[in-house]
Image 1: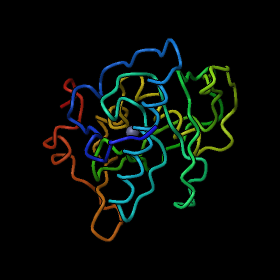
Image 2: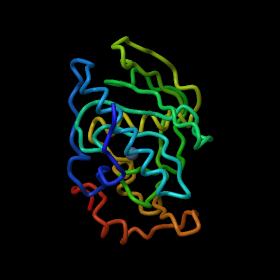
Image 3: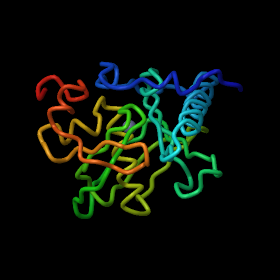
Length: 198
Ligand SMILES: [Zn+2]
């Protein structure tokens, strides 16, 4: 099934849809397959336009389809490997390990990064594309972080919401691909923070 989706279908903050809860997928059918293909097409097209970044994952809401579907790259270190794992209706069933803060970015928050606290281990429950239930533990802290970020999207939460009051947590990508501290006044002015905090 082909897709006409491109990076231009990816919505970015302050689009309010990014703060809405997505709906459960009741039946996995040809519409679901098309949704996943559209997510893949938009993600890979975005990556082509971003020399310094890898597209590690996407939630359906990011292409403005408010369904609980997530794609996660199989190999984050190899841009040539364009295989993604599909998770339908993913849920975190258990949080484990310690909480650590690392840089996080998002295809829906252009150029902005932030130090976000996350659990280092989680247990996940989801459906695969054949409708079978899959349960697994995050194999490492990075994947645990990615999965928490994406499942947050299905619940209308963006990474910046976790650090909205932390004035020194924000960074911005420069032309060379490095992160510079992003002054809090500029973060506020950019409109990416949730209303209550802005
Ligand atoms: Zn994101």
